[in-house]
Length: 276
Length: 342
Image 1 (cartoon, rainbow over the protein chains, first blue to last red):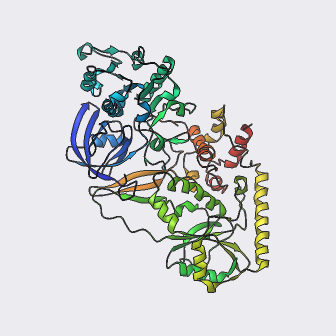
Image 2: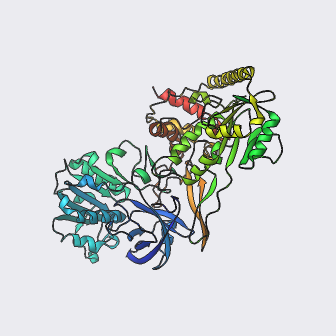
Image 3: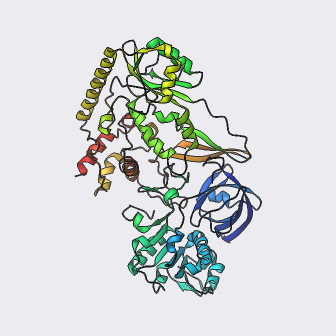
């Protein structure tokens, strides 16, 4: 989806709504000026006029075209400015870029989705896609973890998933105070990866979260018996151009922007420092 | 093959200024630099050796506006295409790498493509070799064999002319009166010069014990990576000069400038040796140490490109050796890589 054949050109986009999710995370509901659609797991470059752009994977259901939501944690120069954006402001987007989640691979399979922290954003989009094709999946389980109940992104919605028929959900936080009213598990995300309702020999796992969480979740899943080529990871790299030209997000012979940002673990195994 | 006398070439270049921004190499402090023609008259040097600037400057500009921001006016009209002259074989080879990056895949780069389609390349044989030249170790001869529109081989009073594309043939045809058929003795002189320069490059390769392309193929992760790379990294000052002068380096940075309704998106060359190159907003950096970034530069050239494109992304032009203030020498790095390959 190019603007005038120029992959660097920005598409004007209106901010329809700003939702404050946690003290450091906001969700923007966006309406691009031209028709727009994306596949779950693909990312966009979101820009603020004169400030710059940064890559985000939409957190909304790709089935709803022409509008999208991005969920953004305030961590740097660009996101600091994005957090100042208000309803009806104009921002810019480019994309979508990347290959996204290989949804067809999961058809007829048992799938475990593991999300952590800000990684709930892409994972929510994937889960909506799975909800729309639940008959095509043999089994679907969700495991989610955050540091504390206070920074638990989409907490209400995720707790609500526990009531969804056919969906196996377990949630955890690293630490909870008594006043938090947290009735779920307390402990690292790896503590809820046992007793999975799937056969690890054939099942698929999708992991998205901070690098350290992905590292330990992957190790645990492999220990549980998952195949290396059945574990999908979202690699957070410095994606800039989005089209495999600027060189910033290279991972071995891949570019995260063009070939990812979702990779199978076996594609990355053997590369150094993939978790950083 | 044709012959064109020195003064007639000057007429040709002057005529080409109607359609092109003609650039010629000129000597400044003993080194060749790309300059604009006709400013400065006829004191240009098309033969000898490569210019300090790599050919990529005419296709992938060091700084370029790639998009308008919000509500800005229409994009500026495309610049006059360039007619680049005196380009050497090492730079022509580098265009294979740049073409792969900017022209293949789902997205082509419209700015690179425009320049590639519209620029005219008048290349030239090397008639000398700098002591940093080692093109033949990378399978490149010091004279153009393909990927040019017109090639010039220096004679005493002019040039032997070879065309390499329909575009080049058209230029010769349109200016027929300036050319005459090449004399067999001139073609013979061309072969002799070529052999002489080849032997000069071979002397360099022997003197610096530069391995031949293939000797380091099958790059393996080196066991003592830190010790291997830190020998050079400890002297590196992270200036990025090697990236800037490299004809195959293609990494760039996009940034927005301006405010309000007048913003534009710029693209500038970037350097993989700079600490923040691969850092993400959250702070994680896959290459926090300088030795990792130096290794990354070599890995990209001698592992990534062989795997994805089948060629090394080095043409033996030797510019990085001349540019490095820390005297990091790609020739010795390749020597050590080859020694480690067994």
